[in-house]
Amino acid sequence: MQVFTCSGSIPCLQTDLRNAIPLPGLQSHVQIAISNSRHMPFSLDNLLVVGISSRALFDLEVEETIFRTQGLEAYRRHQLENENEILKLGAGFALVRALLKLNVLTDNQRFVEVVIMSRNSSETSLRIFNSIDHYGLDITRAVLSGGASLAPYLQAFNVSLFLSLHEDDVQAAINSGVASALLYQKPDNAFDELDQIRIAFDGDAVIFSDESEHIFQTQGIEAFENHERENAKKPLPEGPFARLLKALSFIQNNYKSADGRSAPIRTALVTARSSPAHERVIRTLRAWDVAIDETFFMGGVAKSDVLAAFKPHIFFDDQPAHCDRAAPLVQTGRVPLRRGADS
Image: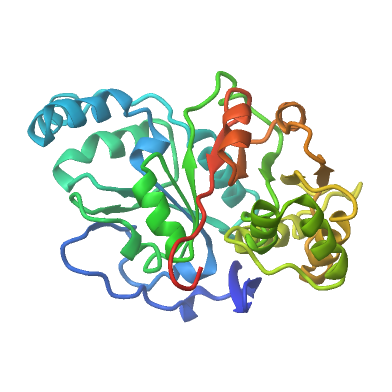
């Protein structure tokens, strides 16, 4: 039994993979590592798919420096000479490891798929795959674009969340409508084991659209509060991470424990909003049929101390100042504003 989207972005259940939809066609110059299943088409439409760059999953900062200062050939030689050296853990490793644990909670039910999305070529990728095997990660699929942009292949793999340390790739992904974040370097406590997957979100321009944020930025706090008061009963438009939040909420609802707490995922909304702008947020989540476990209306107070107490695997925010303060304490991903005519 697996999750798939049956109406809009609301997940539901499918019980028979024999009806899975074949993967969309891919352009020939992209090299793909696929699973060993040859007899049955496998549909990624049924899963929460996380696309992550190799540099976000593993610590490749030395290799990045070699590439930038010495060029592609020096980088190639380094990777080939060190392909049996296991890479250290990167900024996105803890989240990926935690999400993949969802797949072992129920027999024959898979919720999460992780796809490595790298600008490496297949020639320089063996070190990445060797490291995946070393850490026991259930990752079998990859896009190795040989230096080409990764954004065109996000839709082909039905990616729900894209994580990278390359700003251009993240911006291109968010422009294409995929929830994406630029990861900060990992804090010292990044790999502490937690009983639950914990994810914290900012509100405006992350879960919700940037419509209200734009009013605040251009017209000030009074205009923002008046606008939210007047539209309190009108649900906020969806932001880039709304689909991800709804998928997590669905998984939560399938693993309610006896005491009513949602396991194994716990979510938090940490927003700079306060009264009177709180009502529209509450009514929007109610309209979406999404229950967030913990909500903090900060009213301009720094978010970092609340985040340190919540201890998320990752925190998503669009404001660089909030991210800069949070990053030394919790793993942080900055969500860029979408650019384009329809943004």
